[in-house]
Length: 267
Image (tube, rainbow, N blue to C red):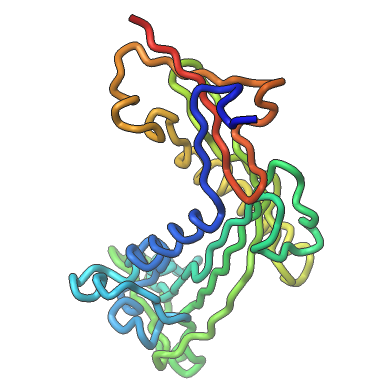
């Protein structure tokens, strides 16, 4: 049976293509995946947790390796003191059902039908000063200063940590006429973080952050996925074929993300 027997248009992309694009974006726009204070940005080769694998064009064009963020203010100091930090997303992978790219932890395995798995690795560090340096600092002033004093570490080395995180997600298509493809989240899992209660709380925070902060910005209009000539047709209306001809739309199967759409053009 042809893929368009039950629909006007069919489009798909495989997981290798998605991961290749993700890797390309990470190398071309490293500032989207690496964050730190101005102190870290001044010497990233020594102060970041992991070297930034940037494309040659990034440095030749003087594009930033990381996004500069404000230091982390220390609570109870009346904004008098703050610490340096860095945060890096060093790995990002997608595995479309069935799993053959990512080894899921037992809590998420096996991957359900019509679902995709995501694996990421994040590394970070806090610029903690020594006890000797802390002893030389005056107590916080009673009046709130305009800018905090940043307490830098005694040397360039920061104590880094890395965490692997996994997620199981899906996709949905909605709307009438102007369809949108959106992502859905099933569950997030952090690996080997103790105690278990801390792991559960951080997973909860990540799920809320993803659902309320990230996923709303990942909606893609189906028109933008079509060829320009089709998107410019007047009176173009899009619709979802639906079952029984198309039981899943979008479909996540055979290591591919598949999309089925019907077209109607009014005169």
